[in-house]
Image (cartoon, rainbow, N blue to C red):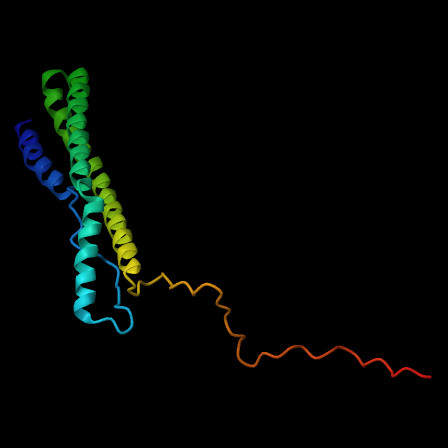
Length: 171
């Protein structure tokens, strides 16, 4: 019985720490400078857009981590209650341990999803900012100027008339 408590006491914090979401450290998409843009100007764009993207996701990791802790606490309480109902005093300790581990494991899955979502939101904000500053972002294409008509494909000519021309009129 004592070994279950000790194992639970050691395992729960490790699992909880491994499930924590953190703010994205930077973008995961490549961006190239606009043609003829000086590199120092491009670096300024990057710094500005990284700050913008970080502002868009600020607080998201803390909110996710708070939810994970709540899930672990609820799992522990439910496990203890179930263990007490089924096995008396000794069952409560085992149930609490199982509930803590189960609740933490569920929180870990949510933490991974939260981290992925935060990174996606960060990347989207970064890409929008860099694109708006004229840089080349994969998947985004510069819009043509108003009134622009693309040239015909090479080798294109109007189709020749079908059939024979009508005969000349007779008088």
